[in-house]
Figure (cartoon, rainbow, N blue to C red):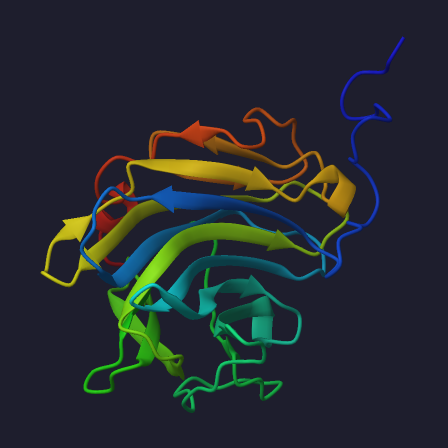
Length: 264
């Protein structure tokens, strides 16, 4: 008789992820029903239950850069729990060109204790909503700027810009990339306020989200899941999987409730 979750031999709920980069990742791909090019994408991230171990965690909004239908590369902006930065808080904006290699970028106004051009010191706090936003750098076609905004404090910080080319954004996705053991204490983040702006100035939101997890065969932990609450969509580690691989789920409705939080 098979043992109950999470000790069944059919699932990976213990040990290090066996993926190529040593992480177990899971994604929410946006489905947007519109034909006008996207020129800005944003999402609100809240770390509801923070990490309790000294491992790297990365939660990000990812976009592709397009020149018409031609893919010029992709990049991700997000918060990190990263021991190389003061208090473990960091923010990252970096990516790769379509032909390979890191995208070049401008110098960041934010400090970086390890002097990493992509990853900068940023003292985020659990339980606070942060808006991640990607848009064209002002007056610089082909350069894309990312910023992070503490919505409670009302403070925005430009991270830097990347030179990728292209005139539009594609394939918005939010994800968790977890370099912890599968059995390490559960961590929860919430995504909300998923929005994009089109070239003609309209605000659009995804009509659905596609759920994907690092496959068991690729070394992913089988005890990660996606869930929903009244404020947004959760990504949770070390828990029973309640939403299957490949599921299509409704997005959070409307602007993030967290975005309306009073200033602290």
